[in-house]
Length: 368
Image 1: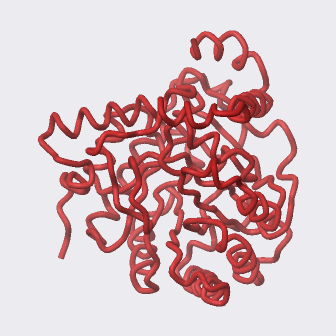
Image 2 (image 1 turned 90 degrees about the horizontal axis):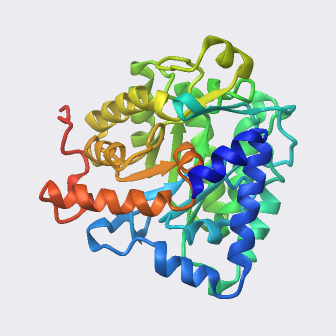
Image 3 (image 1 turned 180 degrees about the vertical axis):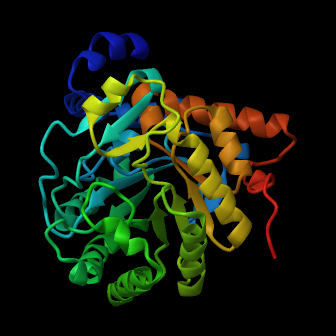
C-alpha cells in the first residue's frame, strides 16, 4: 500500500512538501484517542532478543529514528508508536532559523537516496524543550534524544557557547544529547571536528550539563563520513579522553560515489548531504574503524545507508550497539521500523545469539 501511495502521491510532490504531508498524517492518526496505544501494541518491538541496554535505558530494540525527520519535537510519541525504540529530534539550534532557501530536499529514487541542504531549519532550542516538557505522560513511551547544532549566524569563535546554551535548555527534557558537528549544510560547521575545536566544544557542553544538574545525561558526538581515517581515530581519542558516552557514525556525505542515478539528475539536485544506500560502504568503514579503536569503551550508534535487516545486522556485528534510520524510513514507509526489528531478531537467532547485544562487534578485531 505504501509503495503505491509513494509512487502515485508522494513521488509526484516536491520532496519537502511530501515530508510535511506524510508527517502530518502520522501525527493526525496518533491524535485519535487510543491510536498510539493500538499502534504500540501492533508495531513496537517485543521480542526479548532485541532488547538493548544503552544510554541509561533498557530499550526494546536497537533501531531508532535519526535526527532530521522531527526537527522541532512535534511528533515524537507518534513516531515511537510506529516501532522505533528511540527518536532523535533536531537538529536544534540555540536560536530559531529558517534554514536554506527552497528547494532543499531532493530524491534520487533509482538509488533510494536523498540529497538535502536543509540548513538546520528549526524553531530553536527553547521551543523544542517546551514541547518535550509538555508531552502528555499517558502518551510517553519512547526514549527521546536531542541533536544540537550551531546557529548559522553565530560566529565560529562563539560556537561553544552556542552549543552550551542549547544543551542547558534541552537537557532537562531529553534522555540523551548529540553534538552535531558534521552537517555539510552550515558553513564552517565541519571545521569543529578538528581535535582542538572538539575539546573546547565538548568541554563547554559538559560544563553546561553540570550547571543544569544533568551531568549524567548520555552525550554523543555525531561525525561525518568524509573525515580521513586518521581524523576518525582522533575524534575517537578525544571522545575517550573527555569521557562522553559515544559516537554516532555517520552523518550525510558530500561525496557522490556509488550512484546509479543519471549525472544530470544528480547535478540538478545540486549541493548538500547524500543519504541512503550509496553512503553504506563509507559509513560501515568508519564504524568498523571506530570499533577497532575503542572496543566497547564507547557506545557506537550506526547511521547511513541502513535499509534492510541485513544492513542492520551487519552494523551490529561491526560494532554498533544502536542503529538509526531516516532515508530507509522515507522509502520504506510507516511499517519499516517494525519490519526491520522483526528481521533483525530472525538474523540474531539464526546466528545463534541470545540477543542482538551479544553480537555487537563480533565481526571486528580490536587493536591493542
